[in-house]
Image (cartoon, rainbow, N blue to C red):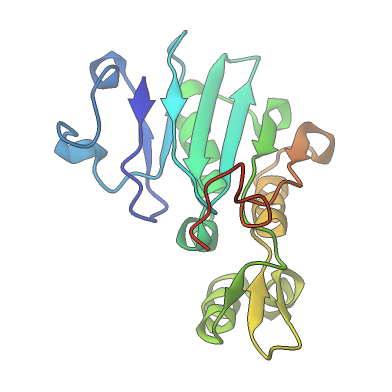
Length: 184
């Protein structure tokens, strides 16, 4: 088992044999703190993230036999954490994004993810106006709603994962709070 610390960052750790079996959070070593993603090529390693409304993004390269898992909440998505994980897999395991499969797991849907105006400014600054317009919608309430699914899908595509190799869950944690955990 290799678990993340999850402080809403875009830091990704490359797991080695020394990282397996460390119980979180009480014995998490310094190099594993503030990590929201893990990649490895260790066979039989179990990668774990927690998510309430933040979707997990699973990565698998069957050619190089490497995997990754990231916690893609608002801040990680803003920092393009799936692309950070893919870059780590390229550098450390020789992966090619064209060989990778990705799954964006359950998380809060755009209809439920209401945010303040500052979210638009953050994404416009980091991603540009066109992308901010694509992933943020102003609802009748006057507040912006963030589409984490689409933002992470865009990140995966731009990192080189083929569109046909990306699967996106349509399960919303907030809409299904009776079955899944939600902070909302």
